[in-house]
Image (tube, rainbow, N blue to C red; front, side, top):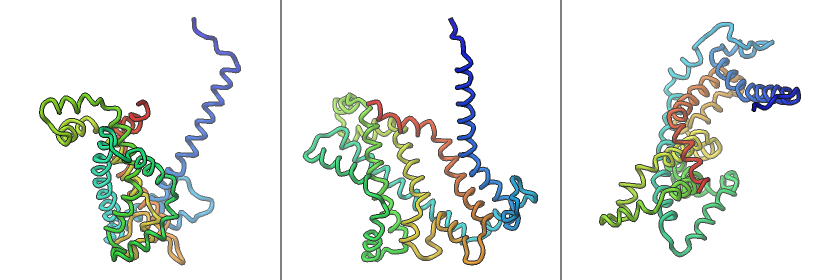
Length: 280
């Protein structure tokens, strides 16, 4: 028998839908404003009252970004650094997670606790120490400085994420390889890695997004324009006497689109990898 909805139930449902619509508007409107402003001239952006839709649709902001080699360099730097960190993080995290998941060794619990404890340290407190290390090793304003620094922040969570995922895979797989005369190395690369694609993708997406959006260390550990990343490039458009808001919005859109595509393509694997370890 179907339950009859009382006026109170209908009122709660309506209120819930209104709240959800308000939340959606609050979350989506800044994205819409960024996209709309990227198609406006800088003069129209400062017009009062502000225009919700561009009065004169223009691509001048995108032309200024895509036609400037200096600004394109920002995108190359972000892709190169984020891509390198992602590859190294996934490789190291996969090896470490396999050791934590499949082997017992002295100090395993203490090492695991140490990895977890690193997540409690605010990154800003490490800014000055990292700056001193980078300068003392002579790698200031280089890709190496950014890659090594980002690895410090991406590896702990990546190891925890991959360990949680590998713990969901039965040990019978490793035993079957051993029965056939294979080593642990064979079991990892021939069996575990192919079926761990959701966990690997989840770790890769998380790492790439973290590196792509990072601002503070990229600003501190680089100084030349040729080494700046996209977040710093957006900030550089804020001049002393003028703000190129339409170019800032266009660069934000161009920087967001690749990440959106990556997430949409890998969404199924990303969600599976993020939730697999939670039900172990």
